[in-house]
Image (tube, rainbow, N blue to C red; front, side, top):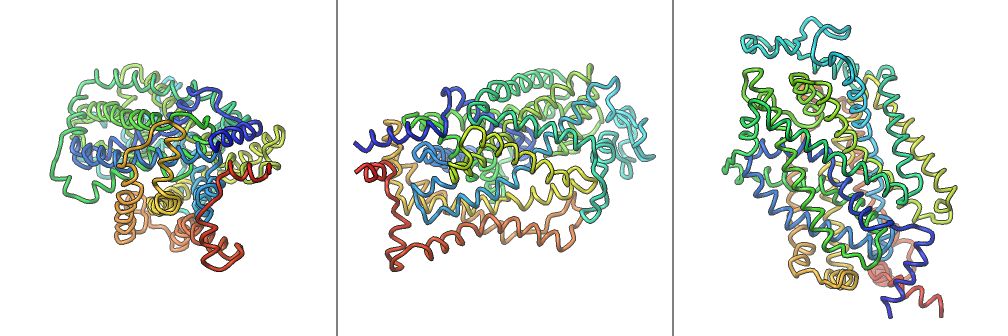
Length: 567
């Protein structure tokens, strides 16, 4: 009876809210979201840095005990409640609704990653020039200390490069960013970058303006084409001289790293970020599924796809770094970088050394753009969905929805103009370090596991998954939700606080004190949402303390609520 009531409730709600047109669209959107820049520029570096092939041991174990169970928890909670990451808690544990508001704040900081898309678009445009500008020092922005590729590739000058910079570094810092001396010197807007930012936000708007009806269609291209580019770059990378030296550095197992606790924490952090865990994304995407979708099976395949992509991306990256090292007559560790340094300095420099450099540069930056496009428009869509679920009459009507999306995209384009100023890179790095940091995700993970595993009940949650998929999760998942994940995450959270150090850029630029204060305000703005919302709910709910706690910890089933309304 309850199952039929839920189905009728879902049908009633889908008339307003929408649903995936097909299972394929759901898979592509989730795959496009979880397979992002972290797979290309973070995982390979972490693997090399933390013991090569030995790093796959903690990564694989933590994917099994943390990644997959959390992925299933978040996806199935969205599919069950058919709500965004805020209102879903009203049907699970109203006392924990602050988790949703914490996700909301983290998502707003996540919007800033559209800047990477703008950077990649800027590089893509310059990739069509007859001579790649990051290959030579004959440009107006270059300094006397610049080394072009011909000199850089001469092994007899490697010893005298202490006070020099590469042409690729100068293009990045002086031509595109126009870097100022610090966050105190924001300077003027870089209008070429601002135009790239505008194009990125316009594309985002038209990807999501019709909700899942439009984003599902866009994903057919944006989720699949990066794999074509990845395959092309993989084949090219493996055929380069010196490629296997790079792959050796990438995978050579150094077992002694397994005794280092920090290596395990790095592996857990990578899984959390690359799987898009504990930030609300999977809950929202799962909420557009049919109630009886087999989210249990989807979970395993999508997690496998993500990890496999990370592993293959390592071959793409390190084969090229091995080629660079051989060209320059240095060891691979001298050219190895992570993050923006890999994507916008090391790899462009490598493409400039290849035959047909423009072609390989275009392939690489197209891949970067499409990897970031998916992740970004899903991030914005999840925020819009969650706010629309809070105020369905205000934002869910067809014309009102499009206007709401336009207001969000336009507002954040204007806000993000600060990121394309001469000091914008300092603002972006501050948001990246404090806005959605490991401490935030660890805290949210603990709260989420306590709310679902203990208050809502792991047994009850397993029964719901069985009701939706006709397959009950093994007892192992229950143990992970209740004990293993909270314990491991608490250790990670504690070590983060104990070993916390003020953020520095390249170990030389120290932010002013007010910037660090601003950073911690960003961190606390999401973390404090959980206790503050719980206190608010306790104050507003009538009854004694015990009665209030019981009401807020035991939500009424939505289907039964409908039955009560009908009678």
